[in-house]
Image 1 (cartoon, rainbow, N blue to C red):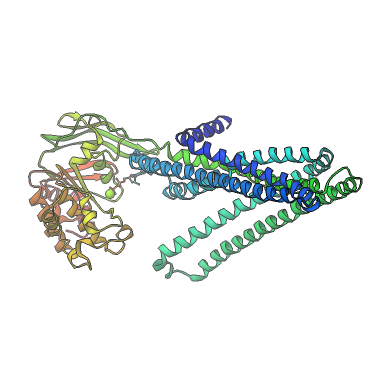
Image 2: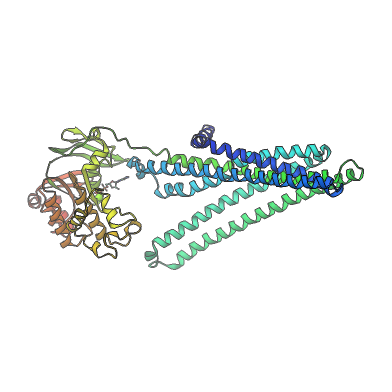
Length: 572
Ligand SMILES: Nc1ncnc2c1ncn2[C@@H]1O[C@H](COP(=O)(O)OP(=O)(O)O)[C@@H](O)[C@H]1O
Ligand SMILES: [Mg+2]
């Protein structure tokens, strides 16, 4: 724990180090501001004693000039502190966001299988914002307040030591109140944040699933929401209660201290030991000092909140990264060979002794029940799934020797789930091949039977929206297939990638694919017999094993697993 804390400090130091000039100037601004405040408190004496009481015109001119000069420096200092310090934080945040984004793009694919996406997202949004807010209350601001406290104590002692000692008596009471209510407020503001998170999360769920929600009993949702809503109300109430009580009590103690100062100071003024000016100068200093205490106390509470936030951010920056080393895969020359490939994830044996040789240019059909391991088996080739045992050889060279980027460049994949991002149709297609010409794009769309895009309101420039939500499953799949025509991969994997198309469109698209990629290797996972008929060989996967192998004709004649599978899926 202690080591982690030290790690957090070191981490903060490292990320802020490039911006030390900003920080130093901000601190300088804070010091200027503190000194100016002390100067204002100090000069109250001259205003009262020399101008109001002694009625000295020269002193009036001097005092007004002094106020203007001090005010200028106070605001200059304020500007330096309150502009430069957040600026440094914004720069740090920009760097953190970029680092996290890179970390995620280069992450080991297995990381996302083991971690909750919602949690990762919350760290990126909520925790970075909490980091911004918390760090802003700290550091430079604390330094400034410490300087203010020191400068003020200087003024107070200089003005009157005895009065200062009277004030000191009130400090423990003040500290107690600040601490007690500070902790209460911290507790409730934390709970309040959790309640807000519950609320947004629930709203998000309802909104994204509203069509399904409508089919269920409304009562259930209303009850659930009532609890969340009530809790949020309760916590807001408590949070506000402690905040106002805290302010009231702190102010009351401050008034008590003031009363004591007036009592004792009044006596000394009457006895002629203290001037009126000195008294008010002292009082002004006390007000500024109490304010500084409050800010310092808030900072002390925030410091505790910073540790868990920094830890959550550091977790994102330690996402295991994929290495892109090794020889370049330049395309298949002879064969892909799986040799006794096994895979275990979380104690589940997903692949069991896969032995398979696929020749260049072969069209291989892969069949099996849901969960039998088909997708996992093919995902080994573009190195999405990695921790297998045994060997996977590309032209006799173990796959792990190739750089992952070169494998992914040469291997194309169309799956059931299609990634569409919130951009135009054109840009969604260009990610497959940024150099593709307009003609190539149109040709690919036609081959993929995705002509519907021409009818969208802005054609290829139509923005598809979040996750392509305005498209049907079949339309998304057609875009995904169009990408493959643009990418022209050496090895093509179609993992139920045409499952959402109607039978006729599917056949036409598959015909186009087989035509375009007639010299390339195709691995085709499907349960449609009419597509399997077009393949040269079929393997049947069951519970992570290859249980049958042969041409469609052979397998149908054999009346084994494949035959039964085709019967069940109603394709026979
Ligand atoms: N990341 C993972 N973590 C745990 N289990 C997984 C993971 N990926 C796949 N599996 C499991 O491996 C089995 C095979 O999955 P998959 O290859 O997707 O099957 P198929 O494509 O044949 O339907 C399933 O039981 C699935 O639940
Ligand atoms: Mg699958």
